[in-house]
Length: 370
Image (tube, rainbow, N blue to C red; front, side):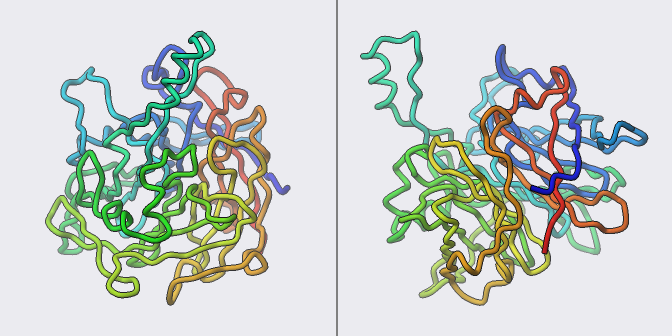
């Protein structure tokens, strides 16, 4: 393991409290760097968070603070928008972030969920909970939001740049699904898993990367006989606020399928490095355990659908297992402003022992080999 440093993420105490026992900073699911800004997401919210790099922090750690929150319903026509300011939200379960072409891209999990038993309940009540399957309509989000041209970029509904109007838009859909889930419903590999909750090896998007005109979605599930999957999409504007899928696969299918032998692990995040895809892989369903970042050479520019065996997917680094320090959930290339050294930033979910205080949490920096 080649851990090279720590990045401190300091959140606004007023926005950090999600509930009595949940904090925004404890459950980070995605991260991306743009200049001196870090954008992060928590999978139980309906917002994106921007932190700015602080000068002269000392102590060997890099610090990001100046927390600004951007509610998604300020920019996108959500499947289930909050009715009032204090209305209970249906979370987007944001699991992927990337910046490309002047946009911040985001992806929800597109997954269903099964209720978890509670210790204080009777056997009968817990059995009923285990039979209850549901979903949040905002999980069916695949969207892009323009970034301003400021030194510290913010999200905007519309940005005029280079004679072109960039607008916030999402893939066409509603609270029951979108164009992608509709297309996947008849797929021989993924169709049977759409009605299965994510923690049961059902469909679960947990990685997003954008390269050129293509969007890559990594699947935590399903894992098929030990093989993980990545979906490749091409999107175009249907109108100013709506995106649609272009046919790019065999027989006019609006997606390509790539299967990777990640040694039984599912995809937990994706990151573009040149022509390669870096793949954070970890256990699927509700398991915890070893996590590895693999390199898929040429994965950001595939010429056709792929089936990639393990010997063609070199391991970049092993990430600490999620025992008490949380599970690695998000990765991003990180510029330390020190001569172009290659580092990768890792943020964690369920990371209470990574707290420096009630609103500051540690992320890890690793050197990138190869």
